[in-house]
Amino acid sequence: MGDCRDQEAYIRQVLEAYRKTPGTTGTVRRSDRLLAAQLFQRGVPVSVIENAFVLAAMRRLMRPADAPPLGTIRSLTYFLPVIEEVRELRVSQDYFQYLRHKLQRISPTGRRPAPCAFAQMMENQTARLRRG
Image (cartoon, rainbow, N blue to C red; front, side, top):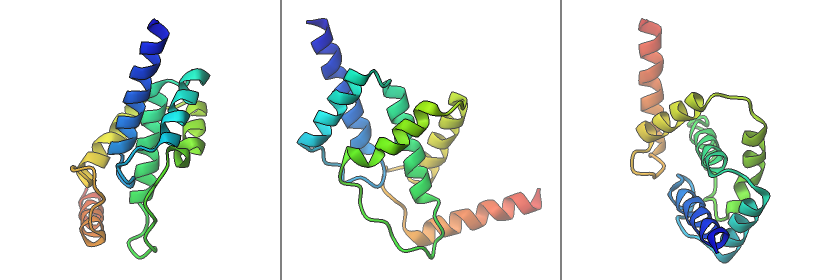
């Protein structure tokens, strides 16, 4: 009975993190729930999945301002390659904390900032680095 409760808590935690990830629809579908259950069965730690969400969201947000916009992420399946990548990475948790902090500064509401706001923020950071 404990396994069932553990699995439900795991699925709930994964799906809530997915729903809050910038770039997603914020909607959870049945297929997302099934994939979360499969990840539980495979023994993928929630921390790995959450780190994959952060890494993928940052990659999407750190694109050039003049790049064509990316579509909205509509499925947890989108993150599978990044989840596998994070499982194999030998990176400190501090790196993912750093990314979380940057992501919160870029998108404190969990929404993607307007391209001009993002470009302005990047210009400000670059100027600060030049000044030393």
